[in-house]
Length: 340
Image (cartoon, rainbow, N blue to C red; front, side, top):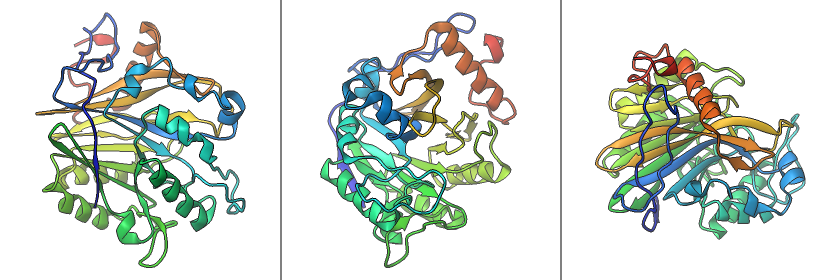
């Protein structure tokens, strides 16, 4: 089990503004809260077009969102290995991040990554081994990969402000690139394995977060099997399920005492040519209770920027639409356009 100690958060809660005025969730921005603040993002690729536009100017990437840097935990989906290894697997779009961008992760206070995804194996076992070595060298925690299946399934536990937060990560329902008893790889998305891991971890933490790389690319609505797995994970003991892989936003569902965010879309994604797009950071406050809120942001030439009121409201409205058919929509207090 991997346990991480962290220092005091600098953030407090700020609310969701009234319907019909400013349809934005406001980032947590102060230091007088006893809760733990965690930011979750979707897919990140720090190569290709990212390198072209950002180069070595890593200071600019998060310069406009200081609230992101001041969270207790920032968790991203790291959509590639970190390696200098030159022999890629045979596939259309192999990605790898140069180790020089470890500085970017540190400056962005990205201290936890999900590495269980369909690109982490782009440079084979050597790339996975390098990724773990590089992340360990800068004290960035990771879930979903390991030198064996047992290690890939291990949770990361952060102990912050007296709260214990446990994280798990998985990819691949068919067992693609899965670790074995003797070789490095991913934690596969086998349902019985996942539910067993969650039940085992539940009694050891105050809050449990499961990260799934799943779904169909460019689809705004989850498959039935995703909803079953997400809800089963909550039934087994997870408090929050965070998804990615479709590259677009999907809905957010309240299920019993938990929340399922089916896809956070792309965050800083250098794998495509699109220079400007809007997405969200999912921010969660873990205190006596859990509060979750989507924070609309714009990625402008692979730098994170704020959105004005109207554009932020458009992103929130789209999430309303994608969440509309859930039995317990996350936005249960608000209908589209702020109407009760």
